[in-house]
Amino acid sequence: MTRGNQRDKAREKNMKEQAGQKKKNTQTGTEFQRAKEAQAAIMREKQAKAEAAKKTTDAASTKKK
Image 1 (spheres, rainbow, N blue to C red):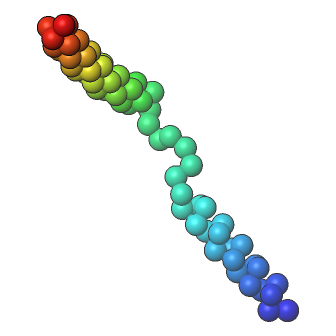
Image 2 (image 1 turned 45 degrees about the vertical axis):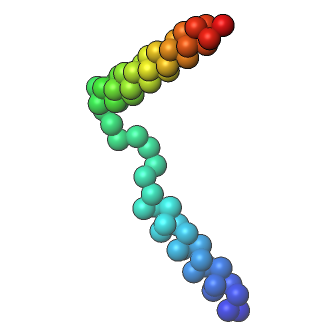
């Protein structure tokens, strides 16, 4: 019955690995909100840069015509 023993050992190993993994968010509400705001600010910056780049390419294309 070595096969059954292998199955049990594999099951134990898998349970041990799953127990070591992070399962949920550990941030408090205010920490989460600050992180969210920081990410939003970064995205706003990226959008502004993209819009500026688009305006410059549009302006350059209208000058050629």
